[in-house]
Length: 109
Length: 120
Picture (cartoon, rainbow over the protein chains, first blue to last red):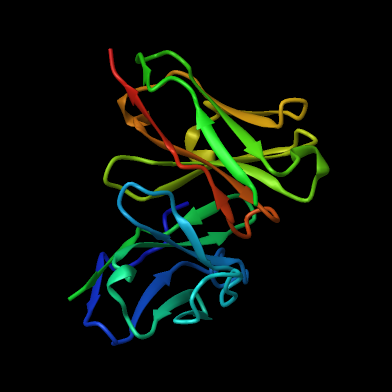
C-alpha cells in the first residue's frame, strides 16, 4: 500500500487561511472516517491535531479544522500564526494497515 | 497524563537485530482499551507505521517490513518492545512509540523518539 498523497509545501501570510489536502483511495480515506492529522516541529515528535476526520483533541486550537470528501481529506488552518510553521502529516486506517501521508511543509510568510 | 519513553542502542551493525523498548508512565498497559504502536521516520522523510500490540499480545504489522519486525509486551514492567531483524542502512531512522485509543484510529500520545543508526 502506498502513502497518502499530500502537497509538498503550502504557504500563507499571518492571518490567512490555508488548506492541506490528503488524497487516498477507496480502500482507505474514502472507506473509513478514521483520518487523523499530525503537526511536527523540527526535532520534535508529531502531535495529534485532528482525529476521526474533524474532531479536535482537548487543547488544540479551534483554528485547526478537518473535513473529508470522497477519497480526499483536508486540514484547514485559519488565522495562520508563526507557530503554525511545521510539517503536517495525515493518516488513515485501512483494514490491513495504517497509512501516513507524504507530509506537507507549511511556511508562514 | 500518559508519558512514553523509548530506550535502546543508538547504533546497530548491519545484519544484526535492532531492539527498542517503550516504557509507559501514568497509565497501565494491562488495563486495556488501548493499542501500543511503533512508528519510524527516516532522516528527512515522512512517517512509517511499523505495527501495534494489545496488552493481550495481539499484534498487527505493516506488510512492507516483510516479517522482520516483532512487537512484544511486558505488562509487569509496563513496557512494550520492538525488534527488527536483519537490519540494513535503510532501517536508519528515528523510532517513536505511541498510544492508540482504538486500532488504527489515531496516535494520541507519542514518545520523544530515538535515533537508531545502522552502520558498521
